Image 1 (cartoon, rainbow, N blue to C red):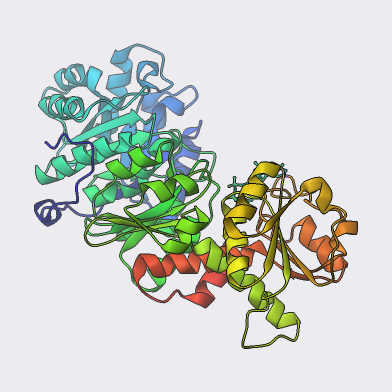
Image 2 (cartoon, rainbow, N blue to C red):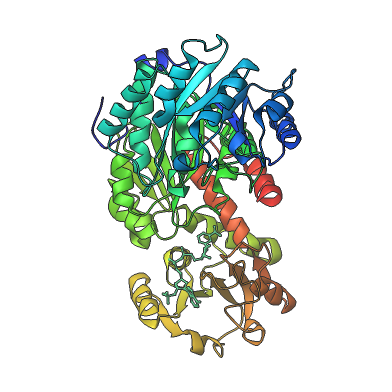
Length: 532
Ligand code: NAP
């Protein structure tokens, strides 16, 4: 068993013994037996492989009366029967005897899987006394709601569970940080090599990737809820997302892993965009959200070639410059990396596609609405005002300067505006001064603060009166698609450029770095406009 913290690549031996694909299991958690039976049918309609019947969720459950209803033949899906006691995180509060008898009855009625907790496994085995039906697989499970033990402790736990006579080992732990999941991946990979069927999941948002990436390491199954709000464990994805968004059926030992590193990251639309783009060109890769607290620790842990590239968002774009082995000179000048790619030699190279995305969007917006000289950038010689001096502000200010604009930066923290001004050769303003700033006609304005972003859609960084001084207005905020700033700028007659255009273009730049292929322009646009 490997004990190093880093996740190693899936070995060819492990790949060779890879079992049939990882099953998608939907927990049925209804309070009434007939509703639970209906959930089985709904799970089948979603494309799931198995449904977990959570008997402990049933109100007033009477096994002899209710189990024949829930397990009635023909069943739309194989059934995994669980009757979880309170002491293992479930809802059943009574004695063990009737609980174990109900599970035995489920076996007699043809349940394909029965889940029993490790602490009750010996007792259950004694009750069964070797009479387990042939077609029923016994899952012996252990749940840890506090943390994820060391790889050695997890390996011991696997051995303990195997010793009970389990057909399938199940271990669920809790992530306190995303690097905890690496230990579960090590255990899965180890079990895959030894051909031990295992379900290994890490609960809560920081453990989310365990649920999506476990097929890469040969897990027996993963859970996906019937719909949002019906999760049986913290941060469980929906079965529909596992199947349709993350393309879980296609994930195998050779699948490359990409994702967006951020905190928070759950709201990001990048997984929708990149997974569909990967699928459209037949690129064997999956793109997941990485909720990361400590960037350096994350990159040291997930350092194998399988973790092939990352998008980087708030608050890690500046730390990413320090964490890369090499940084593209433009990204270094900007001081922010939003794209990291692992080269074949294992080195991480950082880029900034925000810069190209935003500047090309503004240039094209101007070209589409005004007569311009095709031989030079329409930004050349123009007065370009940037509100904000964070990652996006730096990218816009640097890019505009590169195109020959005269750049002015206005920021809440004036010192940061001054610093950026000195760095790129521009000047600085306070936000208050910006209200009456009108030295000339035809100015360009770029908002790079989060002001006006959902849910604060009534906020705007500049009054409508002040907006009258601008010929072109760009807003990096893209939720909502039309911000108050852009709406009022359009009402004042300005050419407006949406942050959505920047988002699409920076994502296309990332796609090209990740895959080495041209980005599917129309498809990515359609996805952003219709699905995000
Ligand atoms: P960041 O590095 O955290 O910078 C935030 C900037 O906004 C700072 O200059 C900050 O001023 C200013 N700010 C924050 N809250 C403010 C407030 N209430 N009033 C005035 N100023 C405020 O963030 P970032 O990465 O640059 O991202 C900024 C925005 O751009 C976000 O909304 C993000 O979603 C958007 N963005 C869009 C795209 C796209 O593709 N369209 C790409 C990247 C970013 P201080 O210096 O005073 O703190």
